[in-house]
Picture (cartoon, rainbow, N blue to C red):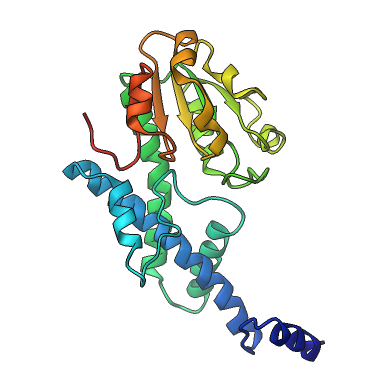
Length: 258
C-alpha cells in the first residue's frame, strides 16, 4: 500500500517524507498550531495598532510582502475557529503536558484567542453605550470561514452566546451555516435573508467575511434600524468610509479611531 501511494505522489511531483506515526502526528499538530499562532499574533498587533493610531490592514499588507512571512493567516478579526486549528493546538498542548513539558507559547496563543472574544464584546458594548441588555443585535456570518456550512467551533457562535447571556436579542443570518448554528445556539433567531437582520436592530455584527455582504445597500438598510445604528465589523470586510457614509457608527479590528 505504501509503495503505491509513493508512486502516485512521485508521478505528480508531490513532496513527501517517510516518518513514524509520532512524527506524522506532530507534523499535523504543529502545522495547525503555527497557523493559529499567526492569527493570534496579528490580532495582538491589531490591538497595538488601535493604541498608536495605525491601520492593521496596511501593517499586515506590509508584513506579508516579506517573503519569509507571506500574507496568509494575517487577517485580523475575531480569532481562529473551526474544526482543526483550535483542536490541534489544544491537542499539542495536552500532549506536551503528558510528557512533562509546559508549552508556554502555545498556551499564550490559545489565551489570546479567548481574549479576542472579550475584545469583540467590549467593542460592542462601547458602541451601545455600555448597555447590551435588551438591545437587538443582528449577526451576519455564522460559519467559521466563508465558503463553508460548518459552524462547529465557530467564534461567531461564541460571540452570540455571550451576547445572549448578557440579555441581548440576537437575530442571525448566513448563506450556508444556519442549520448547523440552529443546533448549537437555539435561543437566537435566524433569517435566511441577510437584510432581515437589520430590521429594528441597534447594532449589526459582521463576523464572517462572506463577499456577498459587500453588496448590501447599507444606506438603505440603516433606515429600517433603530436611531444611531452601529456596525461592528469583526472581520474588517467593509471600509470605514462606506459604513460611516451610510450613517452608521463604526468599529473594526485594528483600525484607528476617529
